[in-house]
Length: 189
Image 1 (cartoon, one colour):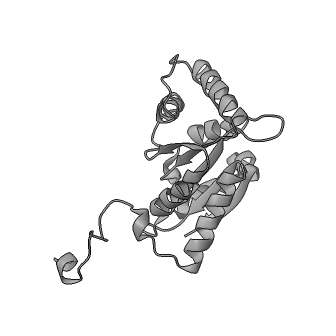
Image 2 (tube, one colour):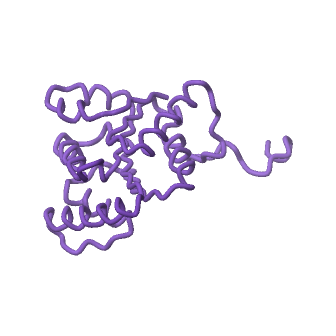
C-alpha cells in the first residue's frame, strides 16, 4: 500500500534481513567497520552483540557482502542448536564440501586440508554463527578449538559469533575464559 503512495520500487519493511535497507547510524557504522576489519585482517574471533531487532543479521550480511571484492568463503550457521558433529557437517557443506567421513576426526582433517589450500591462495574463510547466545557449552568449546587451525603465520579460519546480550554474559563465564582471551574484537549494535 505505501509502496505505491511513496513510489517505492521495493518493500523496505520485509521480514528478511536485507542489507540494502541498513540504516547507518554512528554505532552501526562502527560495528560494520569492526566486523569488516576483524574478518579481512584474519584476527580470529569477532563477537557482535545487540538487542533483539537491532539489525545484527542485516549487519552481518552487509559486512560479508562488502568483502565480496576479496576472496572470501563463508559458512553462515543460522541455527546453532546442533551437536558438534552436526555443526562440523553443516560448516563443511556450507563451504561447498561433501564430508568424506561422518567422524569428527575425519571432518576436522578434511576442513583443515581445505583451509590450508584456501590460505595458500590468499583466501579468507569465515564461519558466522548467528543466534550464538543459544550455543551449548560443548559446542562453544568445539568452536574455540577450531581456532587452533592455523598456519605458522596466521589463523586459517575467522569466526564471528553474533547474538543477543546473553551471549556477552555467556562469554564472561569462567568456564570459557580460554575462548574469551581469543576474542580480538567486540562489536555492538
